[in-house]
Length: 322
Image (cartoon, rainbow, N blue to C red; front, side, top):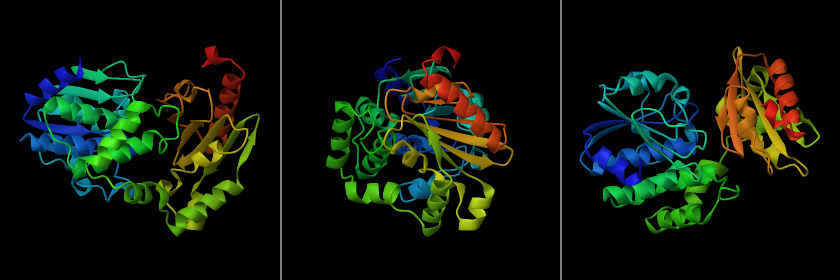
């Protein structure tokens, strides 16, 4: 459906759970908060829901303290709107909430999203879902205020790599300009969301960089339980380490592995033309051409071995094997 049709559908709803994806990033968090506020300005009852705890770095955003886990919702809204969620599996523990809703909608920008729920609006060529929120606000006749602008700006920054990724087009810059005009403070938002780190996070970065490996344009590192104990850091503190692998001269793909009990979480970043979402798809994951992720039920060493092998195959032009 068109954005205008999605807006008309939302106008007919009265109580809405706005749901983001597992391992929420700035686009998911910013979009959830902006859409929740937008619906409230229309007189709707709205709740922001994340299937995993809110990352600390986004706790300063307006309304972040009101976001809840699915099990903490005070009621079961009749409408559920999934935002920045590429498929049902990415809803995690919020999937039951979404599927139990009488009315189910989707607003997303992942090119791999084939549509789910009852109604959906997906634009795979948009830089972020947050960018699409501004258009939705226009269709709903809602003025974008300072709080909404701050949330959308963080969403934009996240999925464009602070306007460095190749998905940063004219529409992304126009959306950013609209946010600034509405009151978003660029210095404050980028500092608090992307540039501030705890001492423990810096120590964890040092540990991860000391375990870096790489060859043939593929660079990787990892974080395990021992490294977390040594530095006093948390897994959240390692969320941006993958970007360092991608910044190495000659890198084509950067990889980062995290130990999650019996599982291993993998993050890919492309430094050029490699579609890392296709590689992540081999492991049940997904994302974007330049940034993707997956989670596998494998020990760390085995996951590293399998992922490196598949990534090498794809870099050699064996995409048909992915």
